[in-house]
Image (cartoon, rainbow over all chains, first blue to last red; front, side, top):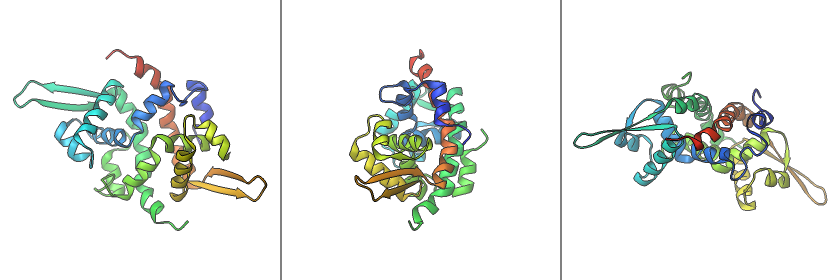
Length: 123
Length: 123
């Protein structure tokens, strides 16, 4: 493998991904069931709230709000509110969010390409 | 970005990552809080149960057992049991698991390198 766990420890120290380490906190935000799917939808471009709600299939309003707040606090997502009637709110990836998705999309492509075979294989 | 959501839909269809699609099921297994950390530990080599339990900081015995069963059923992890006294059980990535981690490790390296700045930034 081109990157190893040892490389990651070189970058971030031996405590990397241990309980309470900032790396674990961000990992939990990003690699969560809904975090991944919201970031994926935004990787395709700016989205209004209602569009995100439809595209992230199965997410509740409460979970979408909470996921967006977390990703915004991490600096991965930017929220833009327009003073219109009715109010319009749009979400987009920040530069940091785009950097993250450059690394996440190849992984998601691999999962998409291999899932069917994985679930139907005979052990 | 080199891979886009449109590319992923080309590979896996428009239903990719929707509720009930096999792609969503595998995504939920792999991109789960504990799935990621167990796969990361195994990317470093074969591990006995007790070593995994220590390395995946904070995981309960029950959650480790359940995570390993899921990853084994997906064909990502191989379980080898040796008829010794006391019995020895070792876990390792399969070829498929190694393919997955080739794509996941660059993402985890980026998260490790950027987490501290993300959590201390001023919005």
